[in-house]
Image (cartoon, rainbow, N blue to C red; front, side):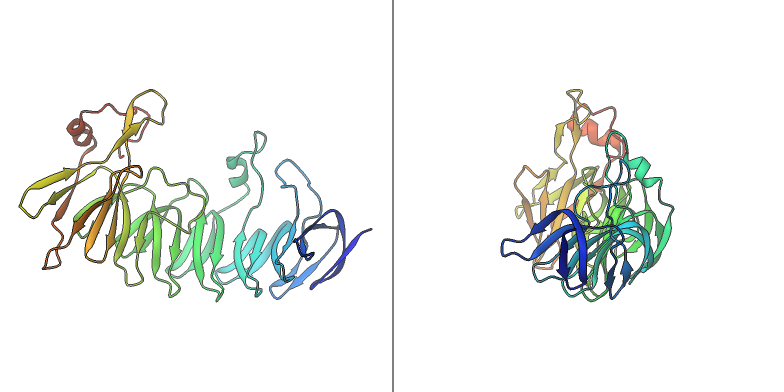
Length: 325
């Protein structure tokens, strides 16, 4: 049997052994029964693919200096994290050994094993966040190298209520935190009114990808001031220096329903030093609104009812799209 020697001992490995260009070990599948002892406990890495949902490939990955980077576990195992004990199937580590991210599940989806099948293996569990306990089904929990929670990512379909500088927000996909625990960003789970320097807008991004909760459409700086928001069913009225007014409506695109109709795109607003920067869509140039000498912005927002938005633009809509957009 082929063996490798690592910081965690010498153990047998199966056929696949990956190395970095300079020769250090990168990834392996260990032989059955191998135990990896870390400061966070002793873990049994996966050695075989048991069924359709089990990912193939290496279950142990290392940094170029030999530090453990990732371990996929043979079975769900209790892992002590800064957010509490979590039953996990995969752990990512920082080079210094701290836990970077934990995944309660690490299965692969296919025609034979769906996202719903995967989610069915979990029951909601509580984790300690900087804002208190949150109970849900989680895709992952991420931490910084000092052990503070950096973000959490929810399973699709999960929504939790969270306190933010903009008030209580129903959150889907996930949330991220500043190092001191202040909310850095959340992804609104439903169109939600939030205050901005231009007034109340309806915060929601129907195109949010949901890969992780690290980056979200509703962002705040460490002091709680709004930095960025994606808006639906909202128009802005901007006043120029001559006193004239311009109305900015959301852009439209070809419907994702594939019926040759159109649907509105989320408009974004970034709050920068002395100005608001608005984009009707990612494909259009930014519109800057500079603050007056008093510090106030010559802009005001108005939330529109669905019928009001569509009627004002005289555009057909995708019948399958949620009317809240």
